[in-house]
Structure formats: structure tokens, C-alpha cells
Length: 146
Image (cartoon, rainbow, N blue to C red; front, side, top):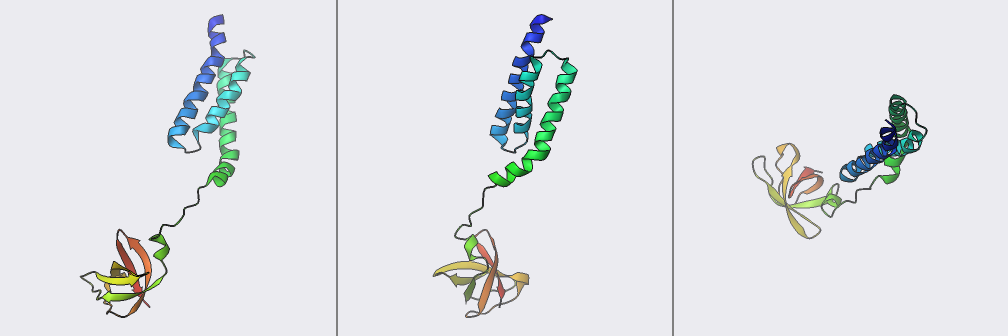
């Protein structure tokens, strides 16, 4: 029994390492709080309190960390999405160079480049008309007549 009691801190260390590894592969900012809870329990287990109390403390500490600190961590670690060249076209005006019909894609010219284009709602648009880019689907601009 004494040997088992001496192993408990090592078991909590194993739980902490396992949670850190899971977090490293998922980066969901969830299991890291359980890893921190397990680190706390390494020290708590040295007091030789009963295992059921250790489990309760582990769950409480981990959930408190998850509930109260995760939102701040997510906000601080939020990666800002940098628009790509194509994303920067959304909202820009361009000129139709090949007729867009309900059944066929046409073409538009924007920034000196030709793009295939489809109209919102399948509206026909004649060459020379000005349109606005509403979205991008693959390599096709979805445009709307101004």
C-alpha cells in the first residue's frame, strides 16, 4: 500500500504529460487546463489525502481554470486572419469583359487580371458593365450589377 501511495505523484505527472501531448496535437485550449490541474495534484498528493478527494480537487481545479481562464487565453492567442490576394477582391468594382448569363459564366477584369465570373441570382450582365465582387467560389468571382 505504501508503494502505491508513493506512485500517486508520478501518476499525476503522467496525466499532466498526457494532457499536454493531447493539447499539442489539437491546440484546442481545453486539455491544457487539465494538465495544470494535474500539476497542482502532484503537490496535493504529497499530503497523502484519499484518492477520491484528489480526484475531486483535480476536477474542480481543472474546471475552474477552464471556465475562468480559457476565454482570456483564446482572446490573447487568437490568430488574425490575413486576407489573401483573392480575398482582397471582395467588395471591389470591376468591368465585365465577356457576357455573364444565367447558364454560362462570363469574365471580368480586375487589377489587370481576367477572372471567370458568375452573377448573383443568374442575372445576365453585358460586357462593359460595372459590377461589384460579392464573394469568391474557387476561381470564380460572384458579382453583382451596380
